[in-house]
Length: 160
Image (cartoon, rainbow, N blue to C red; front, top):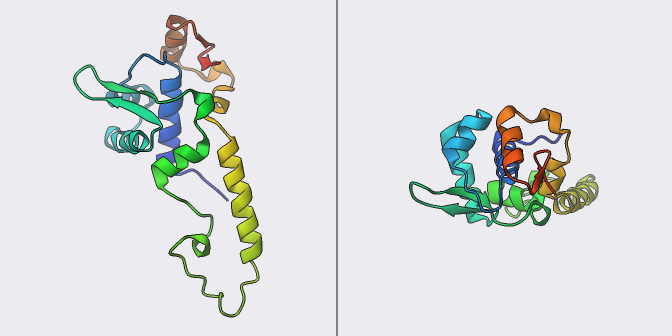
């Protein structure tokens, strides 16, 4: 079964949290950590990766913080995956350095695994961050509700 690791879960939580704010507003790693009960040091590392990957824009300094580098509609799940984890393959034999132990004798599953990898990549490239905002706003906490009321371009805590 495919699972997002904690790094991807935390990245997505932080990105959705940022997306609930105005495009002009910055939110600090500490505020994201406190608001969503995420481990600060791990979140700070993930935010650095997202910044290096061009997913978020970082502003240093006492009034600094993070904001989405593009609109949620322009950020694919694939972009987030690559920023956080690098190039990822569903099977070791498909990675650039991966060696299939069955290669010489003819692997009987590699064609199907390649097809599944291609379908997975298509899915993550077509899935954008805005789809994470299409959830029931009842799942928002009070801080997110207040934030959405302060920013008129955010409807029900979800950017449109």
